[in-house]
Amino acid sequence: MSQSLSDKSTLVVFSGDLDKAIASFIIGTGAAAMGKEVTMFFTFWGLNILRKENAEPVKKPFVEKMFGWILPKGPERLGISKLNMGGLGAKMMKGIMKKKNIVSLQELMELAKELDIKIVACTMSMDVLGITKEELIDGIEYAGVASYLADAEQSNINLFV
Image 1 (cartoon, rainbow, N blue to C red):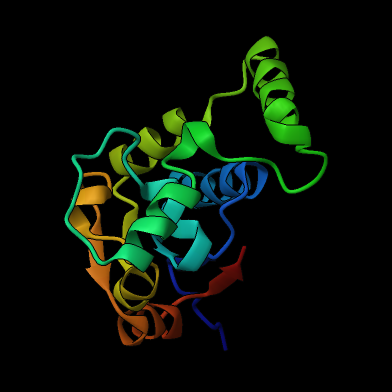
Image 2: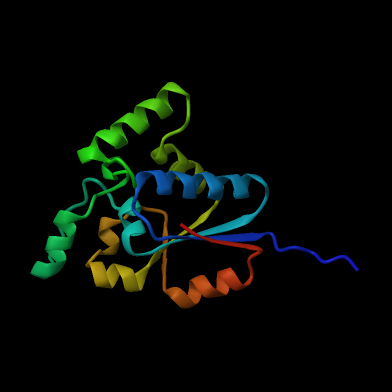
């Protein structure tokens, strides 16, 4: 008896580190290129990847404003997980990627949209960190953990990065 495998994959993107963000999008776009239906669920620090670099100021309580000041805004400002050295490590990594003709995180994010990857921001994490929809990039969805779990339940592959 032949067992058919799901054509769906899910990724939880928890980390806001540049190297892990790149890996998440490489895996996601690779799965989509193979014909998989991909959902990428961004939660907690992973939401920083989806932040606009120059978002219009949003009126918020003080603590939520502090999170906004402290957390990196978008893919250009992410550090790497090891040897960040005040941002020097991230600059070195981007330089090597460019030299070796490896696409940037921003290009991977655009490719993910072109491949119809479902990019979902976790609304509970947004509430905890004081992040509003206006501060996140366009073309994404907003949902809670129940929505992610429903997608994951139907998936053949489920990764946590």
